[in-house]
Image (cartoon, rainbow, N blue to C red):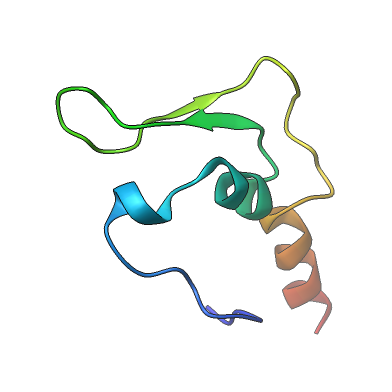
Length: 66
């Protein structure tokens, strides 16, 4: 897969953020540490639905257009 910028690297708890989920998937979500495992569960937010023009969908269309 080709990216326009470097992908974040490191432990999931340090890399996965609400901003990253929004940018990649176009999904408003709450991301926080799980009290048992410490891993970051991703919970879709009721504030907004998936934006079809954001994130991965846009990148996929750009790749297909090449």
